[in-house]
Amino acid sequence: MKTLISNAVLIDGTGDARRSADVLLDGTDIARIADAGSLTAAGTGAGRTIDATGLVLSPGFIDMHAHSDLQLLVTPEHYAKLSQGVTTELLGQDGLSYAPVDDATLAGIRQKIAGWNDNPEDFDWDWRTVGEYLDRLDTGNDGGRIATNAAYLVPQGTVRALVMGFDEGEASPEQLEQMREVVRTAMAEGAVGMSSGLTYTPGMYATTEELGALCSTVGELDGFYAPHHRSYGKGALGAYAEMIGLSRDTGCALHLSHATMNFAENKGRAGELLGLIDEALDAGVDITLDTYPYLPGATTLSAILPSWASAGGTDATLDRLRDPDTKARIREAVEIYGSDGCHGVVAEWDTLEISGVQNQSLAGYVGRTIEQIAQDEGREPFEVFTGILLDDRLGTGILQHVGHEENVRAIMVHRTHTGGSDGLLVGGKPHPRAWGTFPRYLGHYSRELGLMSLEETVHHLSGRPAARLKLDRRGLVREGYAADLVLFDPETVRDNATFENPRQAAAGIHYVFVNGTAAIDGGRPTGARAGRALRRSPDGRTRATREEGTHA
Image 1 (cartoon, helix red, strand yellow):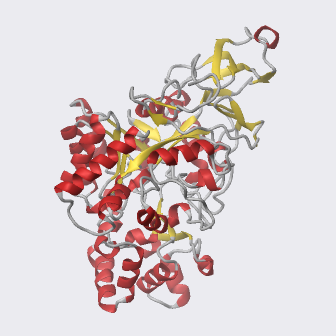
Image 2 (cartoon, rainbow, N blue to C red; image 1 turned 90 degrees about the horizontal axis):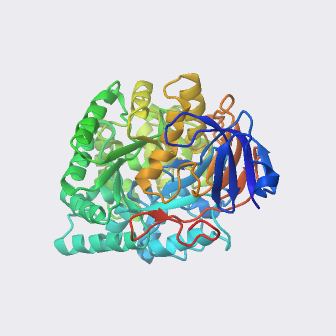
Image 3 (tube, rainbow, N blue to C red; image 1 turned 180 degrees about the vertical axis):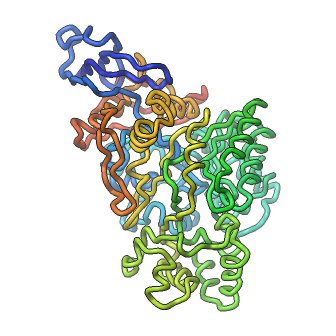
């Protein structure tokens, strides 16, 4: 059925000025764009007309840092993302995800990122390769589809675990070549680039030389590198500089994930980071970045541990926490010197809030900081910290309250900025960015604060990330492009998700189309799932190669 959207305020994703327009959808595509009032149902054969008077029609938003790898399949309605206008997500983030794996690696990864994505036992983990995972996305969890489109980064930590296990150690030349071959295969199967989690094990064990070899492979295949680098706290600028140097030296394009400057030592220092980036851009280095529009971060409680304590996987880590001598060493690292897992910063127990647990006997801790729990129970914070890790088998999620508003605002207006939620969708009290990132940009930062025009904001959330992903005929409102679209009220759009009540849909999002199918209709979810796996093709473009309909 053709759908005519009439009298819309068209913001097309390029950053150009808005205009009034009629837009005709035919199958999965945008068939025509014309002056407002010039198209009719009778003249176009449209079976439905939506009067969009007063509403903005924009491209669907692209989440450049999503953690929906498992929840797209487990909770296929995916209302958290659809309700804020997201139509495409980039998965495989932070160097840890579920492909490529063998049986042993998958078991380790499942437990390691249970705090991010949950770890359901009654789930069919029927893939091992990147290609098989993308195939599974194309068929959903029940032979249907997924709710949004999804592209994938091959995760460097998972690749290292597949070749070397979860232990510390420098890769031998033979192991490094094996890792390069795994990356080549993953990209041939559709991955658009590579991610790293360099404060998470085992990815953090990689040397700059190892990362450079892998980046060279990614660059040769015209992909990009998206690192969670070695520190967002102490030494953050040096960590950013290492990543920029990798891009400069290897020729691999760089996308800086959740590009923040957190912790007390970085207050007001966003300009120094942006200076590094601008200097590299002016020298011809290909760099983009993403951020979320909030102050706190979110991660796992086990991430606070020093890297040596996490070597070998979950059971080895738990054994160290049980051993009194080793536990004392961990305490020294966390409370005196600063753990590399905690960005080189001494743990501040009043900033670490429990957001989710795997062991439901610990559910009463959700929403409380380590410091609060310690005071309530008359225990030392470090004992609370290690006790929760043991009882929850490292599956605990946390919010980390360490951000600075002036840094957030300075970075989001940069010329290479894109939007990424970094949203964790599981846990008793997840970060509200999983439900509110994109309407928060539109409502709070654009309309209320005026940091960017609405046209600029939409460009940051659609056309610019589409260019980084090299999406084929997506990310803009143009004839012949896929009909991934959002209709929203520019006067009322806002985030409703809060830290106290995070699972709240946005206001002002009236319609969301994914590949021409209405997933949100009149502000209500339809249950339709029309998303596709987006794969890197031999020509370097990223497209839904198995998509049905008029758009290929």
